[in-house]
Image: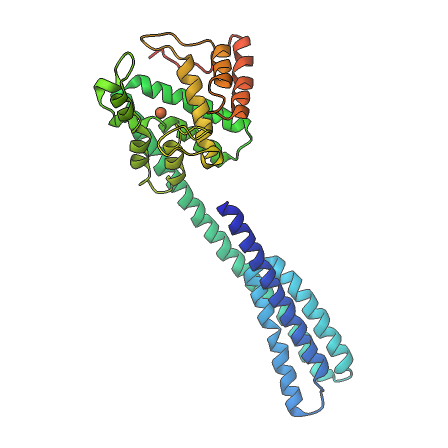
Length: 334
Ligand SMILES: [Fe+2]
């Protein structure tokens, strides 16, 4: 949404600038053609107009780089050259001067475009460095959180790693951009990080929870949100983690979001989370078979989970299983 808005305002900006450039070049040219060449004061005005072409030329080079330079220097040279050929015919000394002016346009425009290009590439390099610095910071924060969870409850941490793998594969399969695939993966990795804030007697309890215990454990998305949202550049990640227990029909928690209100990456994490929870072996029960789990997700959880994502999951999981490949089972050898 925000990106689209930015895009259209950029487009408007570009059109506005092109309009200014074309308008000023046409205006200067009109003055050239309509101002006579007899009187001294008229001559002075022509000198001024000659210099005036520099303004759109340099502006175009700054705004649009080399392209801006080409698309302004060519019409300017044609318009001015024609004006000189017609209205200053036979005035050799003046013509020499005017030819040098044409060369000056080329040199000034070219130098401006080169300088603008250099400034732009420096800006891009700074931006790239800043982005990778943020990403490193975020990844190290994620790593720290994961290791904290591993010490607290290594089963939940293993579950998170499996969900991260699945969420990443689902996001790829759904055709998301690299940034969004990464967001789904990190969302999976951190989705249950808030369980660090759940009391041991509830977190590690084998068996059913009562109402009070359940509402205590239901705080974990909010706890996670509070842990993550202060990290620079992790606002989207915090949103995804906060929303991983929301359900399409609005019956989820903590906010009761519906349908598209739930970030898509959170829906991906949610599908991965449910599948992983259904299929993994717990100390007090063994996990469902894959096809059983998928059928359950389609039927019983049909109003909660995105059906298309469950289909994608099925296409990811079942072919592997038929080949006897256990890639989606978290490595439990340690
Ligand atoms: Fe959770």
